[in-house]
Image (cartoon, rainbow, N blue to C red; front, side, top):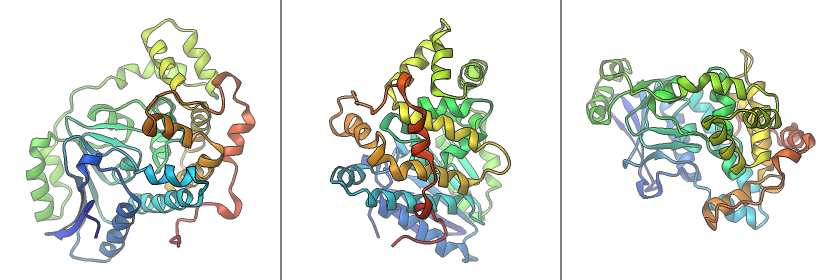
Length: 349
């Protein structure tokens, strides 16, 4: 088994611990597949009452997917590896969301991208004082994925469009408010909580440890967010922000100006499609996959990774400017994939 992850049974719990703290527990393909294999094995194991996932280190539960191999293969013109990576990762995300047993995630530090996918679809999502959850994909030429688009769509008001396009980090109170987490428990209590979960197999013990988190800023910003992010397009939102002389409007515009216009425009198109009772994790992942399937060849993903992680020059050259982004570019990224559509029921070989 990979040294990057520790999977075992303890008491009544199936335990998964990410063990790459120096890499901020970035989720590799092998780690994701090891988690899926464990969940498949424990599904019918009567000795496993709940799943408990956590991570080593103070800085991050999981700061995202391990994208070095995605970048290297994509630069070499091999788009199939990335397409397989995303399809298999999304299958894992769906299994977590639909898992028949309680799935408890203890999430500290940075929780982003792939880290959201293996924690925030669980039934019991526990934050602490260091938790910082975000979906910053528009900054690297992707869209909020791993099922995160569904959580954003279910957030209050237009919070989903705001969080999805800006990548704003959420502390524990904001994460609970936005629907990415459920409970706040100071990290000093986590060893006792873990012991109780293992001993009892009952997620109800979480309630006994829960506290009220320090207040975050999102609740107070909701009226401004709803006012500016109610537009149907990226241009509508930018125009609304430009028309207001406020720190919030200026700061938000500055953030939007750094991110991929194509990614943000597609995010704004995707989230409303996932509102309402008909939307579920499978519909969200299928819509996300339309974008990620094309992201290397037709989107800004490789350039976004180059600027943020490879060269670190922070000056990406996006394919489009926000003010001149053609509507057809958005529809081309999100059109159905036909025979290549995401299939969650079958493993990819």
